[in-house]
Structure formats: C-alpha cells, structure tokens
Amino acid sequence: MPSVFTKIIAGELPGTFVHCDEIAVAIMTINPINTGHVLVIPRVEVDRWTDLDADTAAHLFSLAHRIGNAQISAFGCQRAALIIAGFEVPHVHLHVIPADSLAHVSFDNAARTVDPADLARAAELIASHL
Image (cartoon, rainbow, N blue to C red; front, side):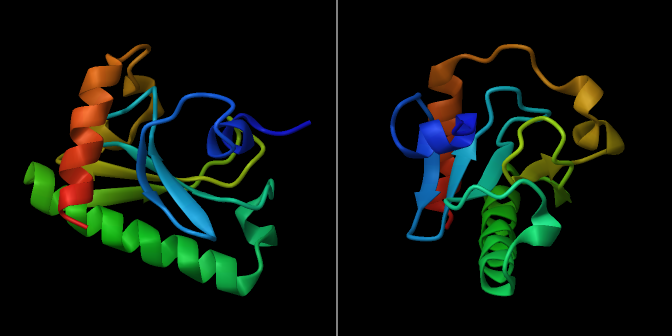
C-alpha cells in the first residue's frame, strides 16, 4: 500500500510543495513545530533512512541543507534543525525546521491544524530563497 507521502507526490492527496526534482520533493508539513517546517522526502518509498542508497541519501541531505539555509534567510531564525525520526510514516522524511530554541525541535509542540494559506505563504517565502 502506498504511503501518504507517495500519494501526495503522485497528486492523489494535496500537498504544499517547496521543491520537486526527479529524486525528491520538499513539502510543508501539516503539523509544523514552527512556521516554515518542511519535510524532504525521496520519491522512492523506503521505510528507514539507513536503507537508502548512498546517492539518494546524499541528495536528500543536500536538499535539506539548501532548504535550511533558505529558512534561515526567509525567517531570520538562529538555525535550521534537522530531525529524522521515521516513526510517523513508513517512508523516509527529513524534518527541516526553522529554530530559535529547543522548543522548536519538540514534536510535543507540533500544531494540530494549520491554515493551508499559511502553509502556502511559508512555502513561497522559502522557495524564493532557494
């Protein structure tokens, strides 16, 4: 059964995209810990990041690096945090989060809902800094 991310990538479910290429996508999460929280996801459906081939893993980290720098420029945050947990969805995804404190890297602080228009504005701002 395809993951929720595979369905978003295929256009079967809505998603707010920041970046798309032949290997990966970057989308806004619908449960952000902080404004501008992005998920970097490979198109290939792999459960654990340690099972990715080296080239795909390198591409994901390179893209996360670019997005993190764009977040710092776009939101003026102190840093861009990177988390790979992998328990929520069985499809590799890197959380890239604009952060000014440890509270911005705690899943306990994730929003339960967010206005899609706010996601779109944050996505446009990040993309404009890529």
